[in-house]
Length: 207
Image 1 (tube, rainbow, N blue to C red):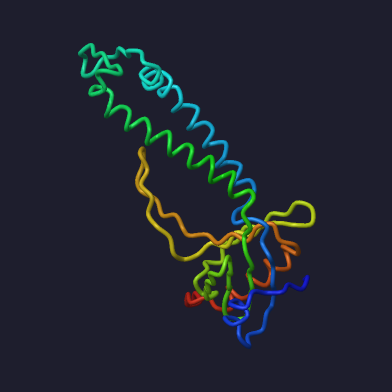
Image 2: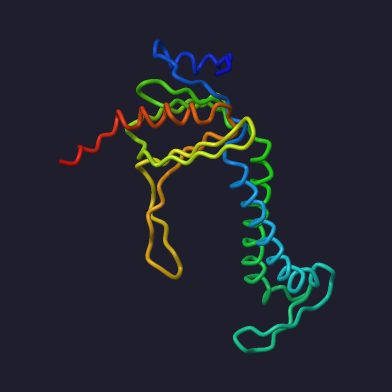
């Protein structure tokens, strides 16, 4: 693995521990995940823009908008904004959510993922002066690896997570995931991670 000049804060946290791998991630998330977020943001924003153009844009241009509120014909315009205030707030919130997803996806393409260092006891991540240390026992051992060309991605599933509610079904448990994206020697790094996770597995062996 290539040699990296590590930030001082990271060197201090590592201390005398053996560095089994040191990689610098190109991105915080796999490119496929980022592109999916951008596409979803475009679709969301495009759908919301229909309501912006139908309800808000005419008022901005000084024209009246006619619609039904609770089955009652209503007219809103520059001199009568009351009937459209609540719809405008709702539409604006949805529009901002779509734009937020879109801009975050584009930003993530150019954002660096920081340094990852594996030691016999933990995985250390350093990004813009923030250092996070995660013991190997915190990972479940569910690992995904993908490779394209000289670089690849690793997804390490953790034992922690959260319950996410669903509209048409019961809530489901979604585990936290650590992404190490756009790194060389991806399979070598994966083997080290898998070995250490297995060695530090707190689950008692089946008898």
